[in-house]
Image (cartoon, rainbow, N blue to C red; front, side, top):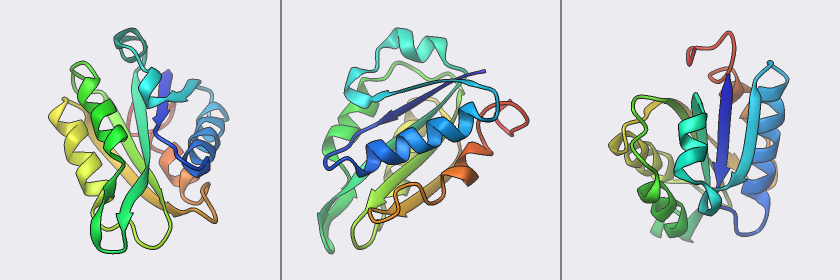
Length: 143
């Protein structure tokens, strides 16, 4: 199984979460590509069987909190996902608020079937990736 893990990162926390998720999925026997969401092409999407999309949480406490605008723009640029299984994740400073729901809905609007999501504090960006990895690759609900 080929899994694409794409992320939008500002301070490196979400990139570290994406790399940890990629390592966890690889350990299950899948081929994994980890890359910045801005670099994802239609060919990358066509070659994957499942995908994971991650973002940092933008906003200030309660004002404008949600996925990074660049992450939403990256999802909007993706081709139709034709029912591919997907997971979403984010890293946050104080509270992710509606970040996962917004990202979840954006991926569903592109045709993905979102099967799991997790939010991790910036202090522990790899928290929750093992649970996400369980939904990707061999022996998962995505196969």
